[in-house]
Length: 105
Image 1 (cartoon, helix red, strand yellow):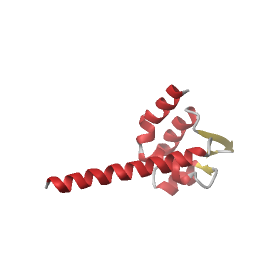
Image 2: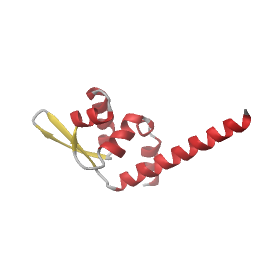
Image 3: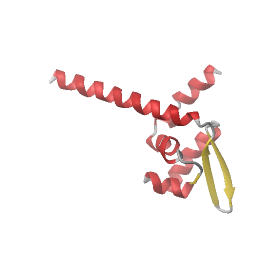
Image 4: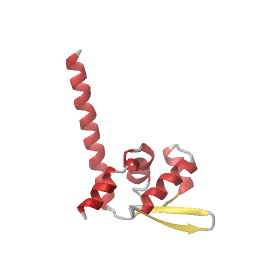
């Protein structure tokens, strides 16, 4: 189980801004269509679809079809907490690097 979690967290997709935004922010309020997600995060629909498919295949997202439209939702609500924590860690990491850079100059 821990091995699977490591593989999911270490995947390249989680480091991509599109995947992070779609999962962590745009889907926070519930199910949304690919079209809505693309518009919400300012990315193209094909790019968003590609990232969502990877996350769906990893079991992190659920999807359903309604005609031509595909809707996605977060499979585990705790993923919102994971994304929030990742954001905090990344901001702290960037802040510490900026501080170190200022000290060196």
